[in-house]
Image (cartoon, rainbow, N blue to C red; front, side, top):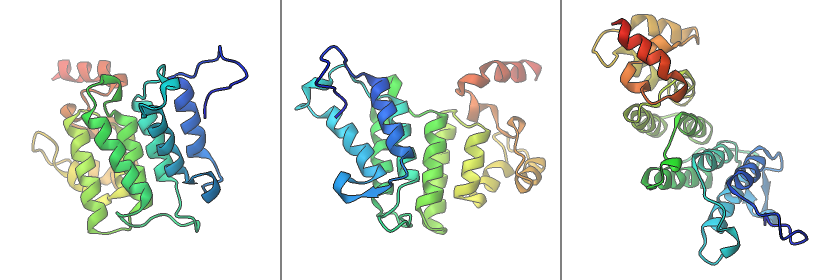
Length: 221
């Protein structure tokens, strides 16, 4: 509960919600059956409590993409109760992350739409929670393709894509959106030195902090 019954004038808001979930995600007490299970379960349960129509006390709270990203971060570092990660698509952490992504994508609220940090967190979750193999590559590829469509690719996305599926990263940068071989990018992947110029403009057009850079690159052509 986020309310302090001792002070009725203190009203929790979205920042309060995000701060609490962020604390849960970073908690070292990762699995405790008495407190609701894994960090992923606890973070998701709090979101559901806020969204429940029975919980009228939380009318001032509106989840946003920071909320969803914090939950996915909790999923990325949640264990199964034995200090192990899920290593399977049926793990609770993976299932919760997928639910959160679907909710974010389907939300009519612009403040809930996925951004670069959300996609980066999701790829980190894939790297941590899924065993290396075809399933993991397929999930990473699907998430990356969605990120490209939304124009949210930055170097952090590429870094986490490499952690989740290096083969997908190499294929993505091998041929850019203009169909040109990007051999220099492949060499930089091996050296873990990916830069902005490796990213096609249409993949990164909605990354906020890059707007001026993208305009400059477009004007220069």
